[in-house]
Amino acid sequence: MAAGDFGMTPGRAKLALILLVVMLVAVQYGGVSLGHYYGYRLSGIADSYWQWNHYMSDPPDVLFVGDSRVREDVDLNAVEGIVAGELGRSVRVGKIGFDSAQPRNLLALVYRVTHFAKRPRLVLFGMSEYQYSNAYNFDPTYDFWNMSLPPDLGFYQLAFEIDTGNQGRLLTGYIDPLGANQKVLETGIPCTVHDLKRLIATNTPIKPADALAPLSNCDTPYSFANLTMTAAARDRIYAQYRQIFATNYSYSQTQDSYVRRAAAMARAAGVALAFFVPPEYHLEDLNPAAYSEFHDRTASLAAALGARRYDFHSEFGDSMALWADPAHLNGKGAFQLAPQLASMIQQELAGP
Image (tube, rainbow, N blue to C red; front, side):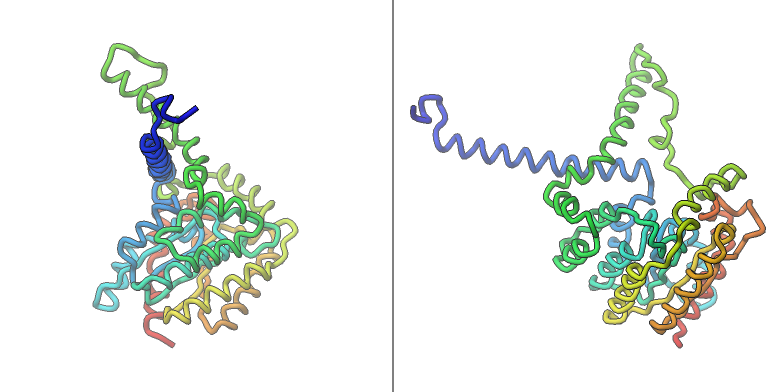
C-alpha cells in the first residue's frame, strides 16, 4: 500500500519528522529552563547553576571556591569594602560554594575558571575537614551538569574521569538534559501547583484549601544568614558529623590528588592559589585525632604546593549567636569574619 493512500506524501512525512524534532527540542529546553527556575526558587543563589552563571556574567579579580561554608561565610560586600579601603583601589571579589563539594568538584570548577579568557588573579580554595575523609562520598554529577555550558571538551573529559561510578548517569544527562533536571522538577512542580491555587483563591470565589498559606521553600528559600543556632540545631549537625567525619576517619589521598591537580591548573594559567580553612563550631571536638590528621595533612599539602594555608577554624567558637549551625556562620558571623578574609586577600595580592 503506497504512502499516498493515507494522504502521507514523502514531503508531509519529512515535515512531520521535522515538527517532531522541533517539539522534542522545545520540550527539552523548556523543561531545563523550568528546572533552573525551580532550582533558584527553592535554593536561591545556593543552586550551583545560578552560582556558575553569575560567575560567568562578570568574573571577579579574586575568587573564593569551596563548599557551602565558603558560600555562607564570605560576606562579599564587607570583604570588598575593607580591601578597597586598605589598598586604595577596587578589587572585585566573588565566591562559588557548592553544597557538600569535595576537591573533585572544585577541581572541575578550577578547570572552568582557569580556561576562561577572563580569569581571576587569585583563587582562595576552602578546605573543610569532612571533604578529605575516605568515609565520605558526595555525588558531584549535578554540579558537573550545571557547569557544562559553554561547551568545553576538556571539561567534559575531566568530569567523565573524576565522576567515579557515575559515568553512565553523567553522559545520560548530557544527552537528555530534561532527565538531568528530573529531581528538581519533581521538587519544584508543587510550587507551581500552589501558585495556581493561590491565583484561583485571590481572583475567583473558589478557595482551595491552604491556597493562601506559605509553602515552605517555594516562597522563602532557606537562608543561613538569618538563622541563629539553637542547641537542637547544634546537636543535629553533631549527629550528622559523627557519621561523615568523626567515625572511621582516614585521610583521602584521592581527594588530596585532586587538590594537587587544581593547583597545577591554576599555576599553568598564571592564577595565584592559596588555601584557607573556614570556621567551624567545635566540630573538631567530635574526634580530635581525626581533626589533627586533617590539619597536619592539609598543612603539609599546602606547603608541598608552595602555597599559604590560612586557618580560621577556631574563630568565634565562644559565641553561638554568630552561627546558623556548627558548620556555617550566619550573617552577623560572616560580617565579623570579613576583616580576616580581607587581610588574607591583601597578603596574597602583595605577593611572597
